Image 1 (cartoon, rainbow, N blue to C red):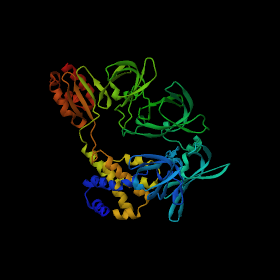
Image 2: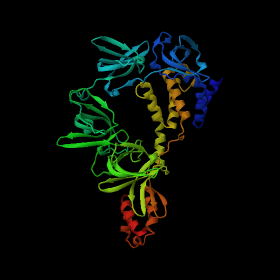
Image 3: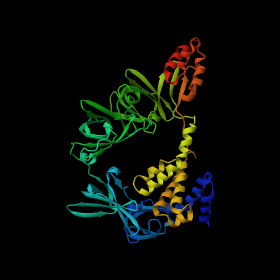
Image 4: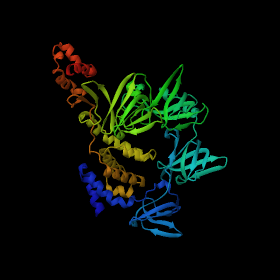
Length: 547
């Protein structure tokens, strides 16, 4: 009766009520989500799993540990068995609030695009695919690393088995037996013996030197894995680079270096050297002399004022760990004597860097340190990290794209590769609702009842995860995109004005009309000061009037 009621609600009620429905539906499913272990980490032997070190938490809250196995199927567990202190205890799932085995997540150490997948047709109605055998390795749960010819197998788009062939013979490993796997790469493999060259110099292999924060350095051959353009502008000087391929020699084995601790990478380009420095969010950018946005991320002389009122001088670099590269969340600071320490903004009141011989000041606005772009005696001008002006056109386009995003997300679920949690976490609440509908539509013809009867297990689990995300999400129910805003502060009166580019002329006109020198100018000269691109010239003009 409850399932029928929920079915009718989900099919016929408006999206406005979906969050409430999802909450009710998730509550009815909550007992089915107590298994904390992914399906691939269990090893099945008939209708039960091989006992592994695990635990159960009783409904009373008591935790018991031992060797755990389950009977039935992963999607419908009948019995949970725990062998503890020589005793075997059988639990019905409803008597437990949580259970699982201790495991390490299965990790693919190599980029997905380097595996060459091939369709092998169907077996008993299941689509089979595998990779072209290549030199690789597995690291077993025991910690033993085995190298040889690596091949992966998928069933219905999901990784099912890992095979390795070497002088010792052929081995087939269930996913529960493996902690890591990957390819043993060389530069010639990735570049097809030099035939593949990318347009961006940074993404190709060149002789380079990597400098670390602890003072060490190593030379070899370096290429970045990929580039992103967080500001949307695609000239190469705006690129941010992620992932560092490194080989000690051109013929040597490639490794992927972690970015923390690296302070710069120098790549040789013919007779010159290009330097890449950390941006603060795990990416690297090309160091451009004289460009403040870039220079801020490099250690510069300066000072910090801490939240407790104390001040210190030394060297500091601004770090942006979020999606907005101009809003800083951390500062790497090194005092005159001592090692570099990273401080979050909750410990800092303000900071100053000396860039090209001039002071650049950063002030704190809630969680961010913001560069003061103009810092005069009367006026200060800086970005607003918490804008309030809605961009109606962009918001409308974003809403229209939500359904496309939901279909793409479901397609990613079907592939079975990639980080599914990342896909779910990247979606807005509106998109998540569309994903939930798309799953029911694709695997149940829009019917809740048919979905529960015929949808594959993976689709049911993905849908439950989406519903969980919907319930827990505290975001707004619709996509809202804001315009870029600045704050114009009058230091004498402490008055603040919100500056938006498309309404700038009206705003600045109020300041200019209060300036006697401005009133004596001809109209052509006056119009120059109303152009947003000349705002710094305008502020310098206003400084004289308002001092």
